[in-house]
Amino acid sequence: MRWTLKPQPSHDKVKSLAAELKVSELIACLLIQRGIETFEQARSFFRPNLEDLHDPYLMKDMDKAVSRIEKAINKGENILVFGDYDVDGTTAVSLVSSYLRTYYENVATYIPDRYDEGYGVSYKGIDFADDNGFSLIIALDCGIKSIDHVTYAHGKGIDFIICDHHRPGDELPKAVAVLDPKREDCTYPYDELCGCGVGFKLIQALAQNRNQTIEDLVPYLDLVATAIGADIVPITGENRVLAKFGLDVINSFPRPGIKALIQNLKKTKLTITDVVFIIAPRINAAGRIKHGNAAVALLTEFDLDQAEIFASEIEQHNADRKDLDKQITIEALDQIEINQETDKFTTVVYDQNWHKGVIGIVASRLTETYYRPTIVFTKSGDKLAASARSVKGFDIYNALEHVSEHLEQFGGHMYAAGMTLKEENYSLFKQAFEKEVANTIPPELLIPEISIDAEISLTDIDTKLMRILKQFEPFGPQNMSPVFMSKSVKDTGNAKTLGSANEHLRLFVKQNNSEGFGAIGFGLGKKLDEVRNQQPFDIVYHIEENEFNGNVTLQLRLKDLKN
Image 1: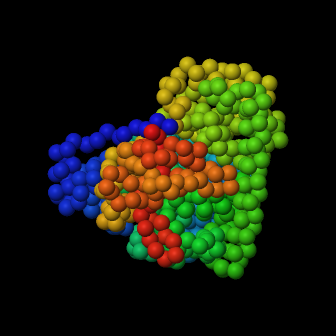
Image 2 (image 1 turned 90 degrees about the horizontal axis):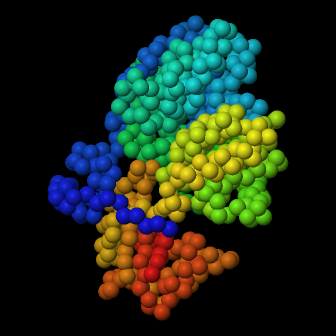
Image 3 (image 1 turned 90 degrees about the vertical axis):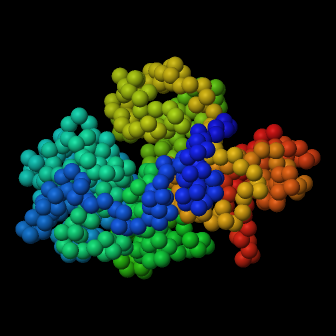
């Protein structure tokens, strides 16, 4: 692991902010690293408020979108709410459709089949709309590059409203309205919304048009917070407000579908991390194993008994997904070892029998294991389909562009991508991709990095610090849980390994005459010898609360240690 200390702000700036906010210089430093440099910015950060949300009509084409929806309602048109099969798409469809149905009944939903139709707006979906008398499609979390699809729909007398958050191409689809804060001609103040977030801005505008307040929309925020966590968008600005209040809904009065998913958990309060690792995978499992419609059915069901039945089915899909990705990961690791490919710059594997719905998860697992740009292929019809994952700092989309002559199609962003190619081109592509990465990736990017916020002494850690750090939540991209480094600590002699394979490390650390702290290092069991015999070592860690038998103590969650 590479330990990298983040650039530290100037002492004068830290001292000034600390005095203005009446906080420690450590807290001031952490705030400045997050772009918070004034009292007003700190107020918004520590006290998110629904009143801080921007006027939805600041988004380009919002007036056109609202006008077209109101026209459809007044004329009794059928409206089809269309969205992708992942968490962001299914929550967005659930959000917009359930809101519209509170005052208009001619609303239906459509999620494309992952295997039959693929990602985004599909011709099959448009044909479904045409066959069933829908004259307006609201596309969520997709559509920004669906130029031909929108033209095709227009020829059938079907209008489109697009709500997307991906970067547009050179040309926009000729839809009635294109809501996308990443449009170059859109001056909306915040451009990091997820697809469900853009959908929320649409219902916020519709609500304003009907003299409803933001308070009327709070019950929908459990969906928005789930999408924000799952789509790994920055937890800044509007996302921070939406995530904070959405978590409050999840923890106090979630919709029956989410309540059914979480009611058997022993946790009393869910964090955004719980959303990412508990709620999101279950919603995703529906589209991976069966169909995204199952997720929408769950999230729009308002009878708890029925929601529990849907949740039970989804729980089974998630169990099937876990079994599949575990088995495929084992097979992929075996393939790499047998072919003696552990020393390459890339990891590229293929098996025609691997389940297409989990190859992205497998790609992530292989990236964790070998820490290389990774692509996992499987058979899909008469082509090969793949999911790609990258390492921090390396643009895998850019690398694919340079070898795209071997591909049929591809799309994605810096850290994740999807693609298809002809089977006969697999070997050529694999060689070309390896060569491209080998020639362009800086060697240090092949070593995992731990980004450290600040070096502190163990004496700096107390309940007051923890109380303020908890107010930094919800954590996420651009506002990650702070990582600290402390040097020359020693174990008190109680270090031991935990787990069936002794894979985890439990110890009790002190630094000079400091108070001692319990520490847990998951996956660090192999470092037991480095902490024995009172030898000093350095640690990087999060500070967390550990509750046991009703007692709450501070604990260090170790990320790494070294002599």
